[in-house]
Length: 439
Ligand SMILES: *Cc1c(COP(=O)(O)O)cnc(C)c1O
Image 1: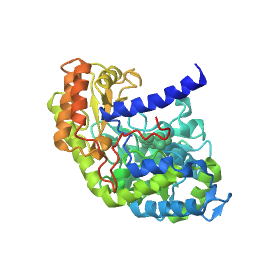
Image 2 (image 1 turned 135 degrees about the horizontal axis):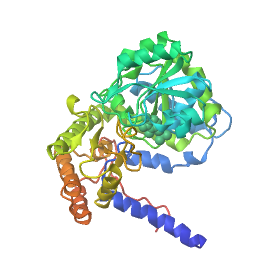
Image 3 (image 1 turned 90 degrees about the vertical axis):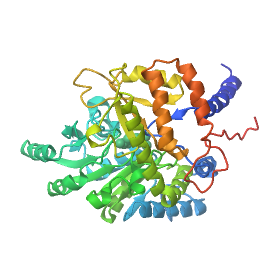
C-alpha cells in the first residue's frame, strides 16, 4: 500500500466510523459520548505540549495557560467528588491504579480484589492472567468471596478471609473495591474499617461509576471510609479518555510522586483540558444525568425481562447503576449474540458472568452480555426509548429477524437523537465528523 493510499484510507475510515455510530445504538457500558467542548479540547494544541510535574513547579517552560487549566481541573475534581486532594494527570484508569499500587504497596504484597467474572477489572488481576497488578507491580491477588444472589461482595466471608490470610502469614496490604461488571454498590462502609484495623490501604476503583458518584446517585466511597478513589474520565463521567485520582489530603504527596515521575512523563494535556470541561458539565448537569441513567438501566432491564431474557440481579431490581447483565445461554452464547446485534447496529459487549470459569466457559464465548446506557442517556433517551431498544434486541436475539432489516429501523430511530444533552453547548451534532483537511 502506498503512503498516500494508507493516509487517505485512515481519513476515510474515521469518517465511516462516525457515520456508522450516527445510525447505531451505542450500549457499551464503559463508553460515553463527550460534548462538543470536550472534543474541541482534544483537538487543541495542548496535546502537543509537555508539562511534567505539578502546576507552578514544571520541568518545562510554555505552561502559562496549561497550568491555569490544570489547576481548574484539580479544583473541579475536588468539588465534584468532595475530596481533599485530586490529581488529574493519570493518562488512563489503569495508570491511576498503577500509581496507587506503586504508592501504597510493594511487589510481593497481597491485595484483595474482585475476580473477573465477579466484575473485577484486568488491572486488578493476577500475573498468570497478565493482570496489571500482578504482571506489572508483582502483587499477589486474593479474590473476594462473591454472592451471586446479591451480585456483590460477601461481607462476612470477606472478613473471615482476611483473618485467614493473616493466620497463613500473608496479610493483605491493599483492599481494592469497584469493578467493570458493577450492578450494585460494593460494601465499602461495611469493610473499610475492618481493613484499616488490619493495616490495609483501601482504594475504590470508580472507573465505571464515577459519573454516578459525581451525581450523588450510587455510593460515596470517600465518605464510606476509603483512602482514595481512582477512575477513568470517560465512562459514566463523560470526558475524554484518561484517569483521575482523588484522596484524603494525607496521601497527596505519595500519589503525586507515583503519578509523576512514577507512571507518566507527558500527561496528555489536551485530555486534562477535556477533563476540566467534563467535570464542569458534571457539576452543572451531573445529578440530573445520573438519575436518568439509572432509571434508563432499570427500564431496559425490565423490558428485556418481560421478553423472557434472564437479567441478573432480579432479586434486587436488576441494577442500581448504569449497566445490566443478561444471561443469554437460552438463545446462544454472549460472543455470537454480540456479533448478531452488531450487524443490526446495536453495539454492546459479551461478558463473563459469575460461574462461567467454573463451567469451563471463557471470554470469547461467555454466557452473558453487558448492556450500558451512559451514551444513549447522554443522547437524550428516556424510559420509553429503552423499551424500543429492548424490542430491537428481542427481534434479533429471540425472533431471529435478519439483522440488516433491524439495522434500518435502528437507523431511523436514531435520527431523533442527534445531539449531546446535559451540556452547555451542543450546536455540533454528537457524531459529526470534524475535518481539518478540507475534504
Ligand atoms: C475501564 C476500567 C479500568 C481501566 O480504565 P482505562 O481508562 O481504560 O485504563 C479500570 N478499572 C475498572 C474497574 C474499569 O472498568
